[in-house]
Length: 81
Image (cartoon, rainbow, N blue to C red; front, side, top):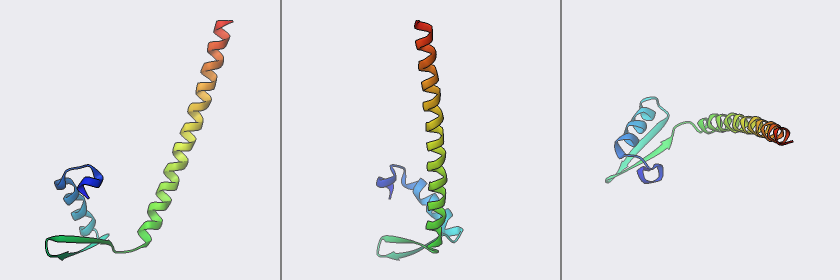
């Protein structure tokens, strides 16, 4: 996980501990390995909803920036004339 997330192992451990403490994850040890699982699959529905909201927000922001860019280009062309 540490490699995939590109962060320190202590930070990953802290996050996993918080998720376990809030009953979002379960874990089991097998030798030196620890395996984690989502306790309630409905969490994926929540994450999907959050991703959809975020994507719409980014899309709206992108649209606004494009409109601002078009206005800026119009003003620049007007100033040149």
